Length: 240
Image 1: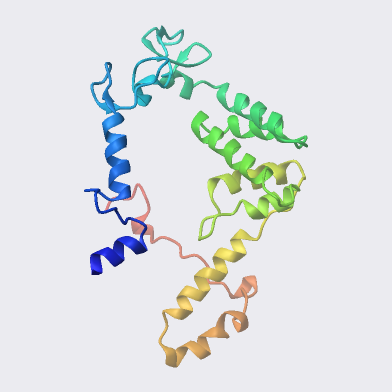
Image 2: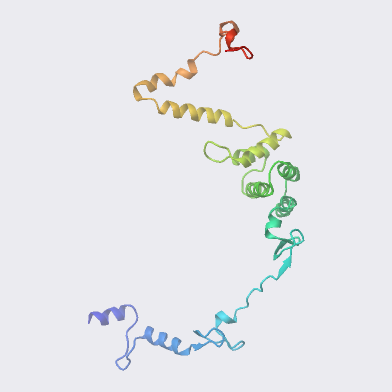
């Protein structure tokens, strides 16, 4: 009775003359309709157009034929501009092509985009330059402001280092007068001071918090000790 109640609850009740429930009958009918595929030999539903199962009937993407690389001369898969993948990765024009693709995707590309690609391409390798262009495209295509100062602020990576991309972006913007430099040096100094204070025991930490602010600056030039002169017997050329 319990099994009958469970079958009735899930809609799997069967008549008195049926050996299988409704779901098992449908599954058995689907299994009986399958035939071995002439191509793969696995059971499946044969298609009228091809006579094969669904997996074998789906069109396959044709494999790219091997070509002779115009740079290294080896027969390999074509990656772009008649080059194989290793030669294409090192091609100096790849960052500029990626920059042009980024310009085509943007509705309002910035005027300095081409100059930035030229600037970083002259100072970094091809792979890193392409990475910088990709990172710049990620910032230009989001919903935030695309002003140089806003881009520079969002390009910083969390942590001690601002990141090579943010550093390259800051150097380019400050060189062309597009943005002000960030306070990265002050942030690092504040982080070092906080870590050093946290490492001090709790009994001395309260006094140490005010020490850097109240510490005097460098004294007048007359108070600095004069550099020590070497002893005459230790001068170069004198015998020991």
